[in-house]
Length: 130
Image (tube, rainbow, N blue to C red):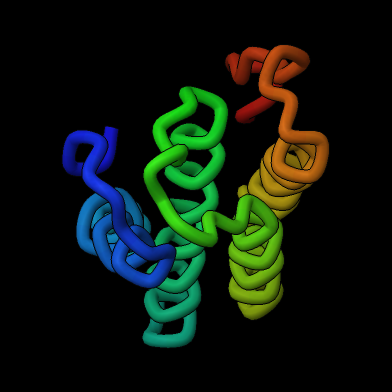
């Protein structure tokens, strides 16, 4: 739930989730790239990937949970745009054994965003992630 149910415009909503979920995901993916000794290209790409996957996740989650009725101009298609930005960021990552798995994950999330149907979401387990 985003700040109770007080009315807000979409730009304010995006700022809240940027400071909440998107920033957290960005820091986590950036830190992972740094821990493995990635160069600045990898670190920046993974920070951008995390930021956008954080936006996409929170948009889809709030939409499915019905937590966006109070957001004027809510645009669930923004999640698809965020997923495409995450995909472009991954496109700058070369030589990673995880890149193809992350691309597969993005395809699954993109389909859920496009159909706005989380009920068919596969459970990500060890077979999907590695």
